[in-house]
Amino acid sequence: MELEDLKVREDAMGNIFGTWQGSDPSLGAVLTGSHCDAIPLAGMYDGTVGVIGAIEALAALKRAGFKPKRNLAVMMFTSEEPTRFKLSCLGSRAMSGALTADVLDAKPDDNGTSFLQAANAVGYGAESHAAVLEASRTPKGSVDYFVELHIEQGPLLEQEGLDIGVVTAIAAPAALEVKFQGDGGHAGAQLMPLRNDAGLAGAELALAVEAHTLATGAMDTVGTTGIFELSPNAINSVPKEARLAIDVRDINGPRRDKVVQAILDSAQSLATKRQVKFEAQMINQDPPTRCADSIQQAIVAAARGLGLTTKHMVSRAYHDSLFMARIAPTGMIFIPCKGGFSHRPDEFASEKDISNGVGVLALTMAQLSEGAWPDSRDEL
Image 1: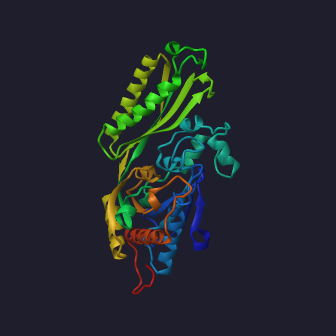
Image 2: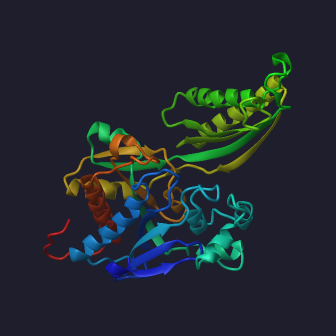
Image 3: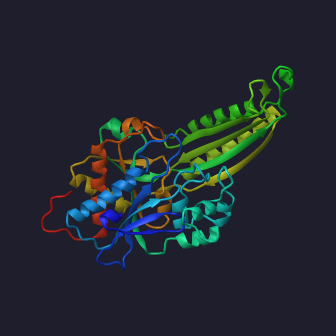
């Protein structure tokens, strides 16, 4: 950001911003960005394309002699992935007011370190989680538009030979944790008719997650049992405890929530059937969002201007854009990724596809900024 002469600031959460001032800074900014954190054994393109690519988009506009009216700004969100503090999109949740101090207080990492302690240790933070959130809230009217460039994390663009995805809606997950508890016992000595096996209750629930999801008949409804832990986790012991972390996503909130309720009903029935104790906790249940028509139109115009093909599509993955839509009209630009693979080491996007995405982002931001082009330009 500094190398491109952007004015850099950092907020108390650890979000980092770089701004190119327009001719009328009284207007709200056109903001873009993504994240650079990752889950274990992830790839190099999820999020990072939308940060480094965004910086290059502004640099390209500068080289082309564009003069923005609204401020153009790029940012890197903190903690988009839930890996450490067990909740996604902490940075954008804080900016949009969708995060409370009570929630942060209750989510230390696996070592017992709170977000506040971690933030203070690296020069961010404040005296309390409440103070951090207050300092990080986006002032009303300071952002007029938000656009995020991202790899698709799915196979459709590559399969159809298309260049750019124009995102129409962003699915949101409902995440829940279910625990079963039985009596456990020796794998040899405890007779089969006398067992109340928590592991089998968990296994049946994992299958129920799949069944309830498929029963909607909707391609946009997906359900995943991403964590399935048994205790004491020994080959010669009947499982006494089972813990499942379940993720259900959809662009249709009521349909998703019906699946969640069906899963909870199945958990209760299985607890009775298997004679085990049962408890469930909702981790988060955020509403899906629709992308702004005005930004979709700007993305399509930008792509056409570069001779690129487009596809209107939904995002089934979670993004900071979901929460930025609570602040300002929001849109997303997708580029193809090899095989549709993401969240794995072989995640890949080609230089050509990244370049296409950066070009579309630059022209989209230029249009939303309502700035001025020179009489002639070579870039873009």
